[in-house]
Image (cartoon, rainbow over all chains, first blue to last red; front, side, top):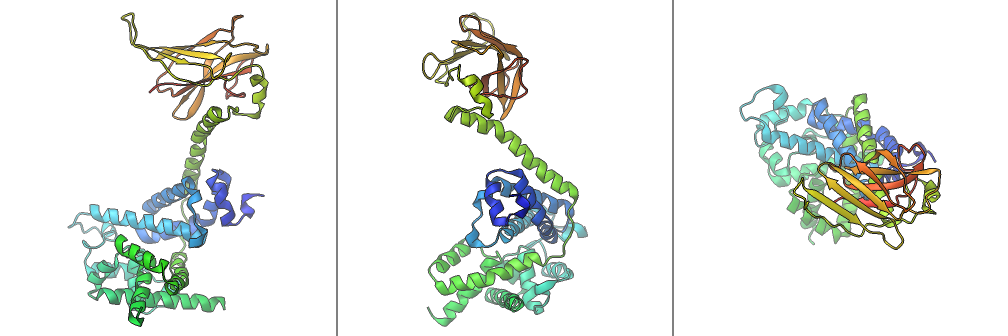
Length: 187
Length: 231
């Protein structure tokens, strides 16, 4: 059967068997959303392309590691992309000059170099979309900073000046709300 | 576990799923969840919400070049891996690169590399190394590689019953890529044959196959000799 007609889960063994046609189908299915996610996180096309190339090649070379118990192939792939994008973002933070004030670089700076005001401005400047856009601001803010900004809960706590427990509580409330709406949508 | 304690773990699970916990904290959550069915349910329940975050980003079209670059790397991987796979199969199953292996292997016993002997040149000239491969079972083909500088002479013995429409072709493998050695050669009546390997730099493996007259661009039969070169 042609790879185009196979489900993602059926493609994975073929990818593990190093069949490029199967991988091409896999890329065509997920490349665009993966790139969009990487771009959303790193904020520049060239860096996002590097992330995608590395992430997809890592999947190609270790395709057999997909564990269907942990979700769909797509979410697994996007998790890999997100982690690589965050790694890149944070490694850039380490290299960023402390007194550099070029806006394009500033957007890539992350805690502890980034001030609270800078971080909030950057994260909230992005148009929040979809499910996260429906959340109360205090919840969407911590989720944005965590998921797209790659900040740890303690960094978020420092930036927002709120206790760690409050940060985690808002994360949970936000996720619960998104999850509830997903369930309603399915009902 | 108290209600408060349970609520605390649920908060931790949210932070875990968003990837904000330090490795030690994440490990604590995993340990707890492994032994708590309520928390397993909570994790299963919340996970799609996190997955939704990735799906909700504004779609941006990647450059078409990106697809080309990714697929080029994939195909390059396949190309690099092919000789290695074949070499492994030659060592293990002694099958050919292609199914037509039987054409040559009927008449020729396949030699298996048994070891090397390396000695420094004794004549005071340039350093010389001799690599000896012996047949796995008599009367198998024996191969000897005599290196001198960057070139070498490959000598075969006991090449018997060579089909008349076949010639010997040597191949070298460098960094996983197999290339033909230009000169073709044939055994004499005593079953001896030799050829020159003009450039042995970086050669990992030397192989010999029987090919149609005129030679082939890639091996079409099983190797009768596979000689691993010492580093």
